[in-house]
Image (cartoon, rainbow, N blue to C red):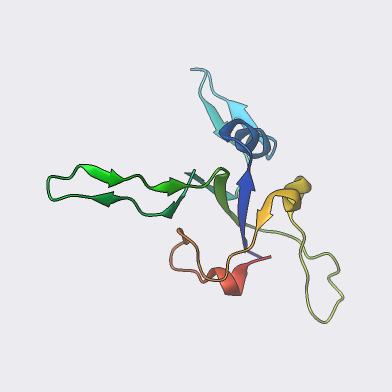
Length: 121
């Protein structure tokens, strides 16, 4: 089953640590690549409030950015907690629930048009 999770971390380094813990390997050229099947999108410090600009394109009011580093994950192939249950339930992998964010809509990013509200944890 596929589920979508939206997460907030204190820093890029903290996010990368959790992402790397999902599984990586290194090729003969020293390039690191994921060994998991999940789709991870690093959104960074998202814009909470748009900036303002004059006719010349000069910033007149700076945008307001989140103080959290945001990551969206399309979790692929998750196993339900109890396969015998009438309604299947899933859990965030490897402690990711500690960083989970909940939004009322689809947020600033979506996966291939999938509705976050239908696929969220």
